[in-house]
Image (cartoon, rainbow, N blue to C red; front, side, top):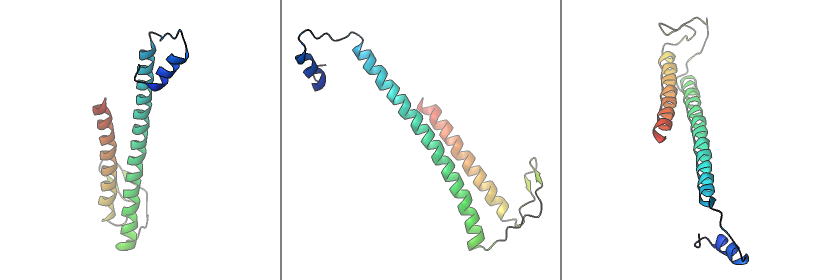
Length: 121
């Protein structure tokens, strides 16, 4: 306690200065509370970052397919059959693997953040 200059000056100013017995436990509890808040903030920021990266990958894929490869996105129908993963609203067959790749990457990134959270505990 004497190494901390603020506490030492406060002790010198008061003649009958008594340090509370639970001072260290309060300081440690405050440190743990701040650490918990920082960990929670970092987790939320990592989720936001993962979402932004997956959206950026998806948008950049569409942009490259339209501008670079000059693909036409016409949506003739909106029939989705999930068991066979048939995306019939996509007219171009090259676009289907790109959509699946973007979905897989976003799922893997989310899975990575969940695993990192469990490991860091």
